[in-house]
Length: 401
Image 1 (spheres, rainbow, N blue to C red):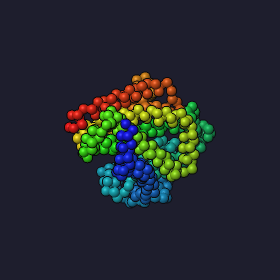
Image 2 (cartoon, helix red, strand yellow):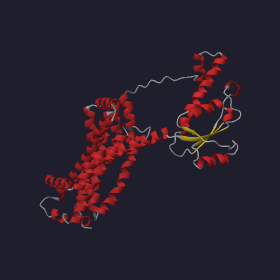
Image 3 (cartoon, helix red, strand yellow):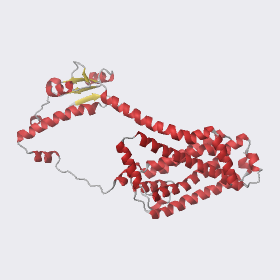
Image 4 (cartoon, rainbow, N blue to C red):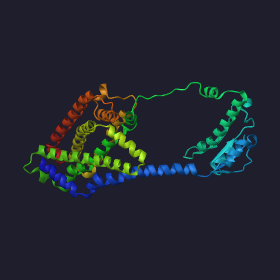
């Protein structure tokens, strides 16, 4: 068995394509993708916030103070129009033609004295389908004026400042969370970590699995291997451990790479937060996370090897394995849903129970007794799948389809 394992590992190391997908891709491309998405998203938001917006105001004579504040605001350019407020189609066409980014319509009932008029209502026309930041930038101006008008009304009524706060917010809830930083952060990101690790383990094992089974058929080396003095059971186990090793290695390299790049590119505050968070997770919790991944990787490896053995060609094997990604995603996504906890039937559902357990370990709220059904169910399924894989490999009509 170990001779087969060594032989398969040597072949993987000689294959530059496999090494690229197992090591180079996780080390460089995945962090580059995540970093690129974050960078360009930030640039897009920054561009939307700083872009000069062209606008038109209809009825500005009814609100000269507001109109003056908008005119004085940086990043806004006035477009003069004679369209009337009741001509909705003309206003809409003005925005759709992209001559202006927005049109603000002020009614003739507008009044800065809220004690006389009450609530003023403005109408804003804009194309809100994209990232434009129009309403956010306009709200800064309007909120400033509204606050000033409100303060004037309170002063004219002779209302004390503490009463003003009571009128604005009659009841305030002072929230005190009993969750520490680890539990709070673990709740937010704990569900994403098993999702990422599972997909990485599966993806990292796919290419070696395809090559070890269907690839050997195409190259014609499978027959040579079968006539060797090594039993078929040992051949299967050697190939099985090779796939499992490749999956775990790919996942660990990717996670380690993302962590290192994140620390290198983050600010000091983020590094301190990451360090504090990682330091709060005990060595036992890390060991348990890794231990739970062993039967999960075994499940993936057995299924992938069975598919690869059955496939006639490399391409056919890839076709069988691709839908497996979506099957794996489903229980992990279910584990991320609110209200789903590691208890009852969920502790026995494969993959979902491991995803929930990793989340609980990250949060520091793990009930260690739940590890019993987790290891029992995942190990039993992994054992059954491996047994089926050995049976599958011993069938001549499967090997030589």
